[in-house]
Figure 1 (cartoon, rainbow, N blue to C red):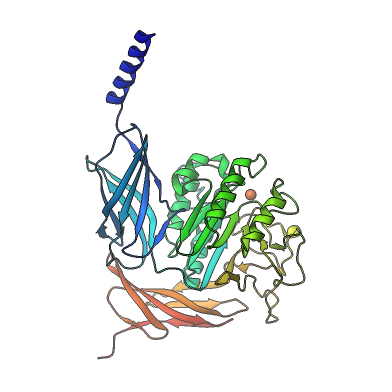
Figure 2: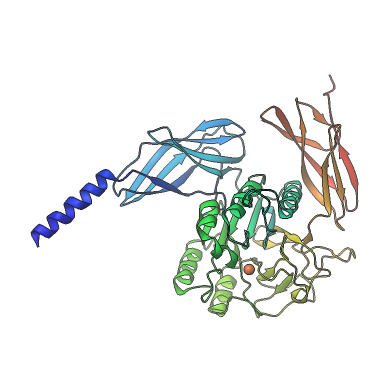
Length: 455
Ligand SMILES: [Fe+2]
């Protein structure tokens, strides 16, 4: 027995010493970002190939080619899991940063756009949610080339950047076929978003789970930012769509956040059909207890809104209690028979939070001046075009005004916009990006040009 133990220890020691030292940065990730103010701390989580090993790392944040070194505040090693707490530089400007960890051999481990420096969440917030995205790629070679879904997604990303929500939520079915190239393309598109992104998976991600996890991160998670918490549940695995262990985790997590404003997303809706079909009553009770304003889903490729009794509300968007909302597909095939919207189209949901209260969350599809019962905002009706002679043209096909849009106008030097308010300039390579705050009235067409500053 002693001899067997000695052999086992010898083999383990040999493996420990001979296998290459590796680690994986589990978080933060593109779809599970760290959201904090400059000068605050966040934690990076590493999984190590060798238990007890503490890699020597240098860490920095990077944005637009500018690097900001991170100061290690503390670290905690437990078996093969290492948590590194970093202090962000107080002077770094607001925006999304890559987290870059450099190991002793000089190799960079980069988590793109995984850290967002921003002020604490305001009382009034604007959010955009989308789900069931277009199918990316498909062109040669090997599918990595451009497909029609890529052009669609690029336009949607541009519209969302104009809307400039405080947060973007993606509620699953981000890639339908499971090939690696879909996730590669997804990643490329999402890096163009200006707002922080919080993403959860859908059923289709199980066809290429490794690709999803590598690109976006863990299946279920919570992203906290100040007094706001985004709870993302995994309903895509095809069993009972919310396991006992996940439900327990949800209850515990919500209890720890009793004073937080919580927004919940899960790919499958809670009611009617093709839904989550276990622990529904318990979940409704839990969301009710925590006064969750909105529970967001996709999966149906159709707009619909339910109350806590599971009744589809066609009488209007304003009613008491949590709103259970399914949002139309951003790019996948539409299912109008499951929709209670004025019209079926590809789109995304724009919604407002005022404190813990849900504000407007449906579109005015019939242009009667009132929000519809369930409609999302239509995609591809807000046209944004760079003009060949400089400047940017915006043509709104929306039935409602877009107040406080942020247009990005490019130039080769620092200029000023001829309309709207210059929010800030950012250098990216040889270009200067000018971010311009502007209102876009319903049905309007406007051009923003950059001009020399008056002396
Ligand atoms: Fe789905």
